[in-house]
Image (cartoon, rainbow, N blue to C red; front, side):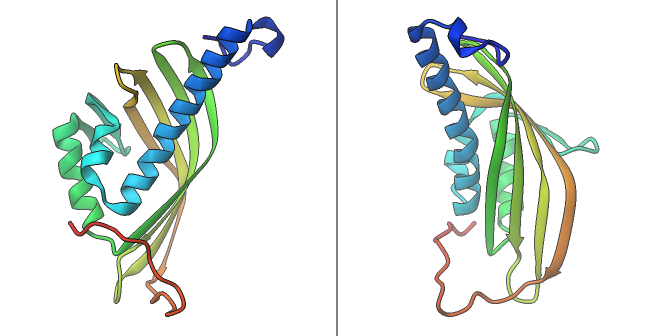
Length: 168
């Protein structure tokens, strides 16, 4: 693999291909998180984390292990009628054959449904991922927020249909 500072001309083709493949697989894992959150697929969501993963929401709210994450995600996601997460600007701070460190900026929309609120969150995920036998998994995630905006929940206009979400 390579460090983010290495120039492409410094690599041989096989190393370059392996590096690009690893970067894409890591990015796919990061995007997979959003898809599973938004569809409430908690089993698949928990599966993208390592068995001993650490999820840090800040202010001392740290959750460790898949079993704990399963409970956390079920509790939090059950509060919403809909969520939508947008990840962008993923920066690789480090990448080798077995580990990756990234920062990914995120916008997340949460709708608690009729009579509730819309919550818009801007922030970033600070992640450490590891390659396991079958895929890249998140070993550590720190969620850090730049801002939040709330408002009254609004019904979706009839011309639109929401995507399906599991009921928790």
